[in-house]
Image 1 (cartoon, rainbow, N blue to C red):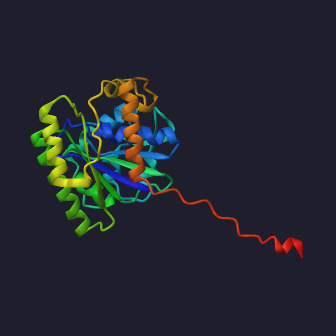
Image 2: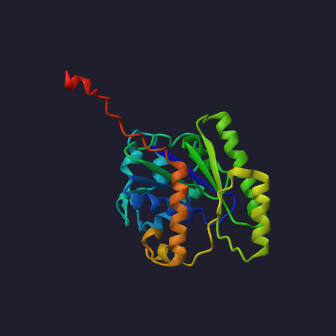
Image 3: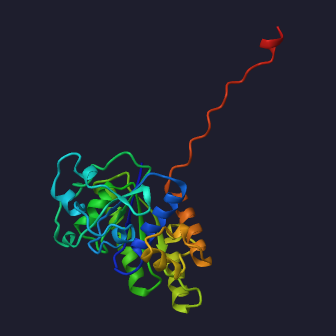
Length: 260
């Protein structure tokens, strides 16, 4: 099971869009996927057709008994391969010790944690649980500064409480190639962080909010822009998942055995 925390230091940069894009890529492959929504705005939960949950991540964090997280899992509107532990507004006031939500259900190929847009306790808790971390940013000046802070936070958690954690990449979202400021900021980010910056950036695409409003995976949305985004999410998912195991080789059988 691969657990990925998706974070940003600034709201409105499309962090939940990346979570949903990865979930969509996993959905397309039939992977068993769990989305854990830790963002009080609950955008990922709503896009997965969870609007009035009985139990949420706030309830899970309030109760440390084994099995509570599994009890809060509900099917998404995308089908039974994508499951959700949804969020609610009360998460804004939830304080929890680092590592409290580390007991996750183990019956999934991929777990995606949608963090709140800050470096508060909920985000630190997610990082203490995850194997990989993705930082999402827009190609704007203030958002890029937040991306650097997020990478520093990942390093701190890896050094202090989760040595298995590593930053997988920085995803530049809502990129407009005809915008000079976007190009300059994307170049600056690449200069500062090198290969950590996922290339190419995710374009500003009308199909993304349209598919979210329709409670549909981006991979099922038929437009040129959405197909481009789907391919980028496929490639991004490939960087997160372990390589497939090689097929077992049949033992070498000598012909001499059958001729003598």
